[in-house]
Length: 449
Ligand code: NDP
Ligand code: 2IT
Image (cartoon, rainbow, N blue to C red):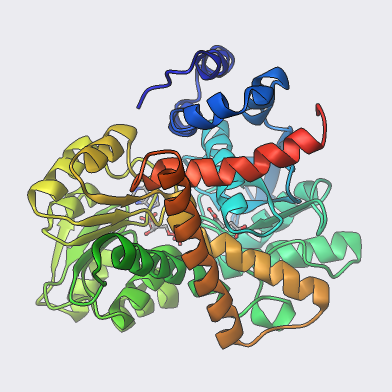
């Protein structure tokens, strides 16, 4: 992927000079800028207003110390982050990731992607992301609680229902959101919608847990229907990861009649040619926070293999990377294509490397970028904010119907934008263009900030 327009090249060069040590962020900027050339050429006023220079620079970045005591009474110190990237169309919105790999480059790339994703949902949400290099694996509930309380004690200075509304991401689920919410309420003496993904008894929305995975399949269904006059029914499907996104993507795929044959975690993958039994997976992952390898103890006919990237060597019609960034590289893409894959849609954020995406596109494989296909999670977070503001809640069917409608709209807006700019079928370009156009208009209207 290359950036040809001289203005965009200059902007990219500046980012490289300022942040040479941030490969994930540079990757995300390349991916967006390489597709915006026709829009920039149509709108010379953007260059005159320094719009792109402003777009690639976060409005605010916060880094803080998170000190907490483990169960042995030993003091531990982690690093906390919140990147408030762009608030042109609404309060900052985006998840929190707790994973030992977290650093500023990763949080910046996620926050940058979130700007366009949130814009695509059609809801008024700006882009942000946060997290910590804390590793929740193997920690007791009491340690998780103390860490979350310490993290929120500092984060609470910067967020608010009309300012910045975090949610979950890798390593942050219902348990963590509960502890974080409790601590905010205690510090501020205020019960408000400052987080999404909350439990149903204290302001959470029905279907938020399922939303990213379900939304991914609603998008895939529409994409197959419009672009290939086909459906997920009977399609052999491989899904990486076995966390929140992967599990509910698998559930909806099965409901639609697809045959899900593989799931993974960071250690390895399971292959069950008869179709994965999701009850077993949920019991292992949601019930006792176990490892995916344990699946074969209950289902001995399935296979477990070490090394998660091996999952892409399984022949399939549909591949849904739902684990993490850069988990599907060029050689994996080649294997999928050699084995006859028809569609690749991202449940994770930036799971496919840029050269893998280029190969899919050149080979005529239907490809959906995460900022469009995984937007169902944040969209339903937006619906949770809406319900919190109204002090009311919709039933599951109402939320699910809204989620479905939003995903179908995202597909069509993305598809149409690509077509309008002469790149029919290129959903990456379409998503960037459709997401960007709204942000650009809002930024132009609000002056030089
Ligand atoms: P979870 O923490 O629930 O699950 C993450 C899964 O990915 C686990 O199976 C984990 O395995 C695996 N994983 C994490 N890191 C790696 C790694 N370095 N290599 C291989 N596998 C890894 O997170 P989510 O399901 O919520 O998030 C998954 C992806 O979806 C992320 O990219 C996230 O940003 C994205 N996303 C999430 C949304 C949400 O609403 N939750 C919304 C939109 C996107 P292990 O247990 O071994 O770590
Ligand atoms: O990457 C994402 O879109 C998320 N982790 C969900 C963010 C949110 O605010 O619900």
